[in-house]
Length: 237
Image (cartoon, rainbow, N blue to C red; front, side, top):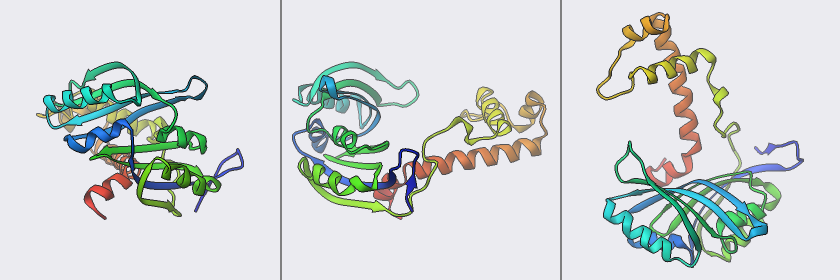
């Protein structure tokens, strides 16, 4: 199945694994880090890509090793900002500008990708992208010029509705999850239980349980589908 958009293109999902030669991702081969791209904005006319990545490191020392090598990479023009996650130990965010030429994001851009998601580990990039079906062959050819591609697969059963949306939950489901979050229901240790939430929200305990179950099911389904390729590569089917 393909997804057809108003622009006339038919889109498919492609999943691929590649070793990107002469790129900053090479530094991950010798380090205990896992990386995910948070955002990637292409400025073709200015010949650079503005990106933000999250880096999960084994330790702060390991992250500092990565950062030093990252800054020295010829592919990186500038490191703009570095921050640590206050909720997760050894999870960092790095914003930067990298060269445009010979980058995977640039090739996806050139091949009219409308969405992509990735995971970088041990000098391999695992990428899921949604591209026009007519560009798949050219995309693979362009990527092969950057390095080794052990795996490249076009899915024929692509799920629609992959992009996160605030409207995925009904108003009651969103209200229930939001109030539960705001009042410490998901905290460890839990600060409020369903009885207390029932008083706070004015909803019965049974209604809260139903809305919470439906909302969490939608949230988990969306997260799993969005990251299915990476989960299967890591944990198997």
